[in-house]
Length: 311
Image (cartoon, rainbow, N blue to C red; front, side, top):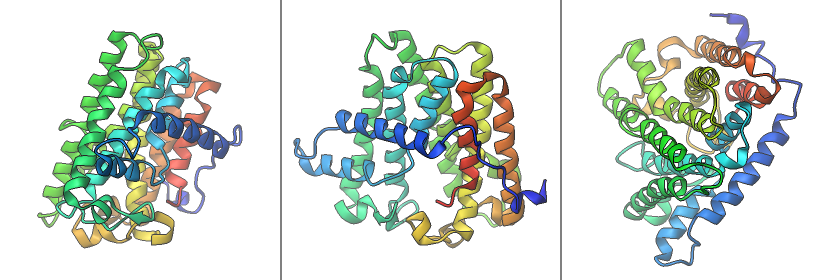
């Protein structure tokens, strides 16, 4: 571990304007999501309002941005990755709605606004999450055939299943909940939770972008390693922010992990060592895509941003 990292974080690349890049991609993604979702007056309107409420309540759009950036890094046209990128955000939003429910984390705030079940009730929140998850697969299957072949779309759907299901996000969430009941867990179990609950969707987002670009085997391997490292770094950074962040910064209650008995890196190793680990992972991610050249510069900057962010 490199203790100096706590005081001297790895700088974001000065070769590009990351803020402008993220904003351009978010605008593009939000426009596509607006077109893909039913309008809030479509029948049944309460359900569609609930879907839109959570999807457009803010957020970094990190997963779809990573999909677009990975596609570009692999030499592809980001337009081909736009529908799959939106699908990943639909899945992510569904997971947040369900994660906030009383049966799960019982949160009242998400992104600075009331959570779905506080506004629409538990039943409609569950159904809104279900509808977003279902729509995600339709978005890819019905995607423009001129941009992605049927075979490529099937590969992307398979990747989504692995990232979101019991081998990925849902499996990690299950182990996370079950681990609340035990006094201590070991590092392999903690890493399983983090790499599946959060990391699997980030890894999947990167791999889906590479699939949309028809990446070579070598490029896919490099981007997969990048996604693995960035996914774990993201969750460790989240754990740290839950300890040192503020409700205003995060848009949700802080200290929640400790209250729920969640198993986290700061809980096992403290804030300083956890921060070091996240920064090491960011460095590893950047090294993994070292041969991809200038098109991968946004991914390099995002890796550093992930561990230096304040929300």
